Amino acid sequence: MIVYNLTMKVDFSIHDEWLQWQKEEHIPEVMATGQFIDFKFYRLLDIDEEDGYTYVVQYIAADIHHYDKYLQEHAPMLRHKAQSKWGNRFITFRTVMKSVQ
Image (tube, rainbow, N blue to C red; front, top):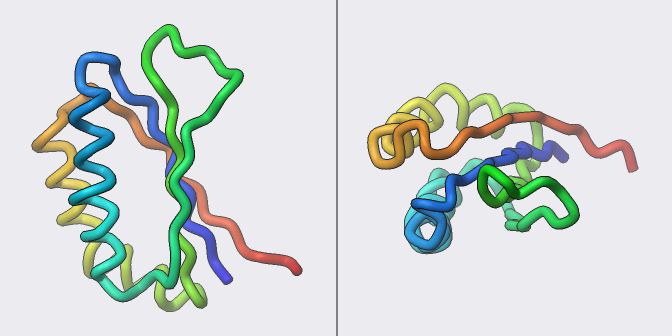
């Protein structure tokens, strides 16, 4: 299994609207690509929130091929939509992990 991990720092000025957008629009769009079998959505605690809240979304792919297909066929458009809507009022750090169970 592959975990596509996105850590996002969200400016206070957009927080409520951004959170609603994540839950109602963006995450459902990512899942609708068919490349992930599940996701988890978290808010990080015990970290510096001076510049905004920090969230993590973890998308679970069955294998690296599904993840690669998402990156090639869907990610550019979804990233563009997010940047167009929110600009630089949030930042995202992306990591990819493989289950070693």
